[in-house]
Length: 101
Length: 168
Image (cartoon, rainbow over all chains, first blue to last red; front, side, top):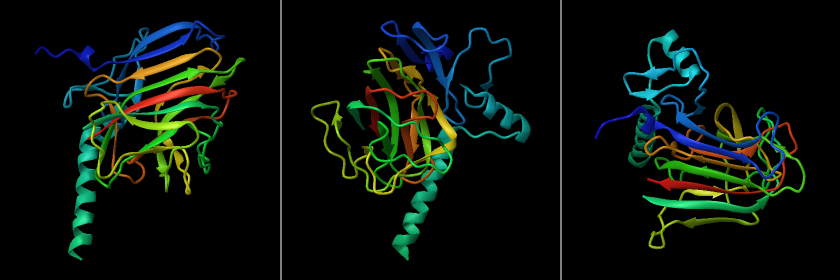
């Protein structure tokens, strides 16, 4: 199946049609959102953004500005799935050590 | 693999700051915490529907917790139900609720979603793309628990909420 970056987009709906709204946020707002592959923060796509959107070629996923900056500074980047795998290994190792005494 | 919904019929959250402030029982819609040290849970959807009778800007935040809640249970009007009628109960069920003996504390840095809205007739719904869900692992800080709570500012109003999650 053909992979599309748009398949990575979630959905955010904020509906103030029946109420006062908040500041400039009035009426119905529907936005695509993506999840940063490094920290899982939800990012609303800004259609007016002129800077390049951060994209991790290694993991084929979008990144937030903070994770992209960290990647530029450190030169390394872990996806959140890698971080979770490492956490799982640590927990399993600790559990085995407790069991084995 | 069990999709479940934790819902609150009505709650008026208390605006709570990050630093050195815990989320007191019954003042926030819910936490989601892994049932074991290695359990993975995906957050699939969050919905909040305003029930306030006057304008109440409400700054709701989904964030990881730097201190996890202990002895967690459902508060008033809170439920946790399987989406599929044939779902079998897990041996170590994922924990949801908003009442704890040791309250959780929202991380100052690991905020995941800002779902601000006006609870006077406002509705917010966030849905993750398949495979791009927000996930937690284990039951320790900071990867093992997320909370949905109100941040300081505004005047939080009454709302009904649901959060759909899947224990893996």
